[in-house]
Length: 97
Image (cartoon, rainbow, N blue to C red):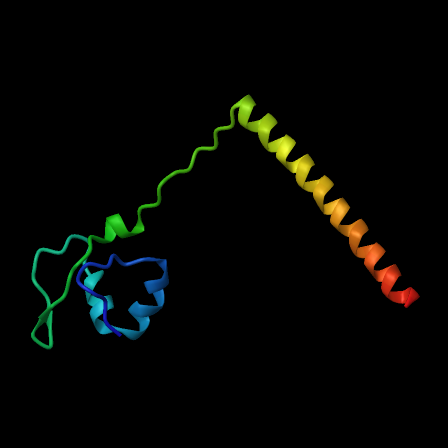
């Protein structure tokens, strides 16, 4: 298993560090200052502090967005109810035959 030179290490690669020595070596040091080579290929190192940093997510909802989303939810509920009624009608029609 290898990481390409342009790929960033993602959450999916948590498994890679357990399987791949190259992936493990890429995050081995907090502030990598040396070059690491495995089988004559340079390992692209990643700063560990940047890897562990998670962005904060702030929730914002304006009144217009809230009203629009409520209207869309009501419309979707109506359409779902109509679809259920049509399905019941089809079941009754199939039972009659």
